Length: 320
Ligand code: 2P0
Image (cartoon, rainbow, N blue to C red; front, side, top):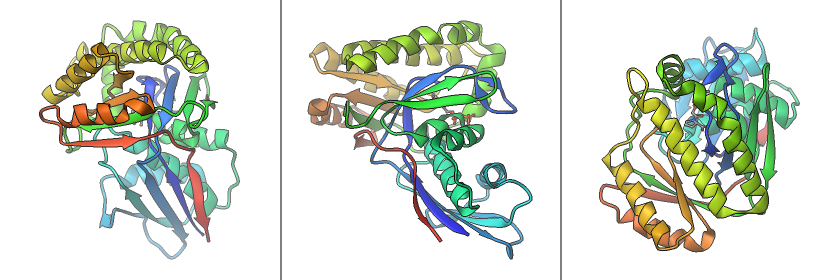
């Protein structure tokens, strides 16, 4: 059977960093994200009993490096033993560069694999499966503002507010296009094992989750800005203090932060967040988008600027 699904990446405003259980890929902390609209990953999965091995193509080229992780996701979703599969992926933004490509990839793959193996699962079940493959992928099973609650044995994911109920915009400043030097999974374990700030990161996450949830409920942009920037800088500080240190930023990342500070000083409703990579995401009110885009595009060293609104949940495109 064959199925195709599409998912958009999400960006965490309150971050997931660290695992309580690496085996089951359970996050140590809860997180709150926004699902994007204009970036996407499409995945087609075709199970075929005549195939000797799984195969993967990304944007038309065969890819061996990513295949084992995707095959493991198919094992989990379809169950073993299973027929081998052809996986065909299409993605309209840089992969493994800190733009949450694993979130959209594993969300789309989970939805496509479940349909292609004849399973009918609700969003919560799909989110739990996607989350086993990549923690952040669970959030792309929902649209708009999404909260992931970390529990002892599983996760609970829910939409806090729809994309049309508070239509913020995101301007992504691309400061580097190559793949990042270290993957999130490995970097998280280094933080957990060696950063002197890790335990306080975990202990104090609920404060930030509560503040962000309240800000979203009240549509209070300023409060959301304060807690999201704080949470982002706290996560990166923890990584900088690990051994070896994990520093995802480059000099252009820092320059983008200065641009955003200048905009804020001029009264522009915008704030930044940075994930496991050097790109800067500026979140703003829709009426500020052109201003924020122009300011970041003219920041020295910025390679590209992408603009997107908030989007919908991962979904099935076709089953055959
Ligand atoms: C997040 N990130 O909440 C955080 C912020 C990056 C920085 O989730 O090990 O690729 O596959 O579960 O989901 C990136 O981590 O990690 C991530 P795994 P994932 O979006």
